[in-house]
Length: 397
Image 1 (cartoon, rainbow, N blue to C red):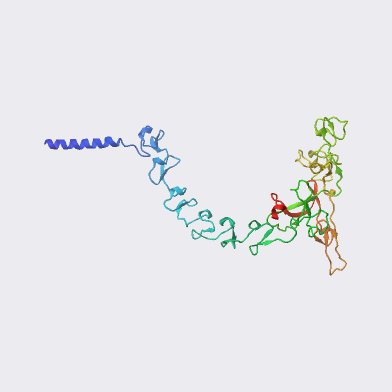
Image 2 (tube, rainbow, N blue to C red):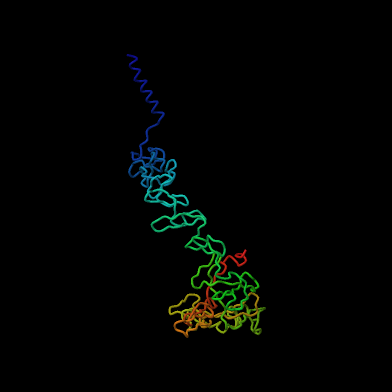
């Protein structure tokens, strides 16, 4: 009988010790509580509901997350690659872990491959150059079929050498021999100085002495320029632009009207930028070149007008020049182009001429371009010239 009375007591002691090691059980998420200490680690007690809530994902089980309501919920899929196992990656469009050769986006595939969404796999091919490695071109791609990435095949001039142009029909870079690109010239305005047509002799801006000229090549009709060149506007001073000079304030007196005292250049009658040009103080409106103006607000019906609405002449010259030339402010300051050399005497065999300035084929003056005043000069055409960060010396090495 003594043994029987002791066995329950030993069992009870064992249970008491086991419970004492583990501590009192904490209510799970959603369980009842009155304070935070009633809940487990990474949990807190919601005073309004009297229930335990998760504070972050560590308070939830495997495959669960703590949502914005502080309740644990099962993960329906993946959010990024860390949620996937092995060699799989997370497809964020579906929330599923997929193999490396599977895809739903182009970004799931390596270069020179494209995502075949019907199969869900990456396959060799491309939709555009962005799918190919640097130096490769996407050839043969249409809206319904994939192209292939090919090395040494051009789709644009940027894959060609200087003065080469990409033949899009063959995918081969070809030397552009349409004109004497960057050939030296004397700026004599002779028709054949740069190969005839509308190839002009241009001033080389890299020469600080402004004494070097080179040939441009016509691109006014949309002709492509070869790699290294860009289609620039060709602008000249108005042929009839009068010589001008600018008066400055020197030693408290105007440099021309020495009897006039001054503090700044603007105090002088012929101050910059207009100098002594006839329309330096009263110009004309951009929107209505027949309307004279002294301020921008005189050029629109509801002032204030945008800056530059009233254009006045400026006296422009090279740095250090004693004299300059007045800029144009209206199209009538620029020359008119004429068709010369056309023979229309035989209606069945009319012979075209060329526009005297524009250089294009023509049968009468109406087919020659109107020369307009642009930024103070007369725009006579467009030429392929070295791109902004290059010079002829760079392109001819």
